[in-house]
Length: 210
Figure 1: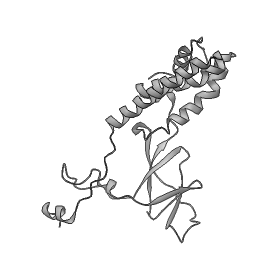
Figure 2: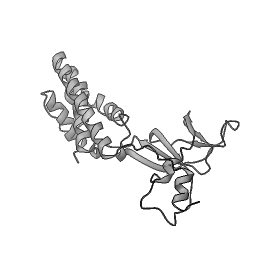
Figure 3: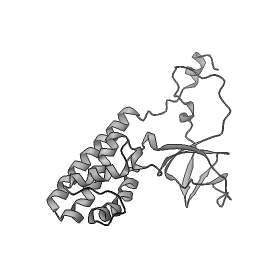
Figure 4: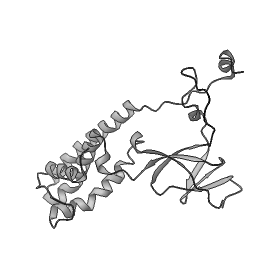
């Protein structure tokens, strides 16, 4: 994995600028990179539902200030960018099918309702686990295509402040958009979103479960 400094220098190279030896050095390049680096990384983590940024955590219950609407209230993890799903606390499975008409994991067929508002999660699930995208991913943890998209997006932001070249900025914006689409497409090809397959009573009966 490339270091954050290496990625920053890749972005600077795209603008035909000199490299930096450290983020805190006293140079125009370092000052401009520092202005945009964390911002672009935060935006990148919100581009799509990245599988490598997904986390599972049992939520901490807090005082429920909406008891007429929801049974339980939990605090949102501080590193949460996008809440994705709520899972219920369940016993370890004794036997799971290797194949069949149902989805795996079968919990995907249970879209537990919840809302995320005001730094809290409201749901009717007791001892809830939140599936979410985290924002505590370092640039050095990015997969190759995502790293390339990040460096080009960063380059498009720093090009004008450093070079004062509108044409260069426009070209980098186009290149960054292409790289972004490629990274997202690669993620979706490797980890496609499969809609839950709800099994009918008749199918369960044929499988001997009813």
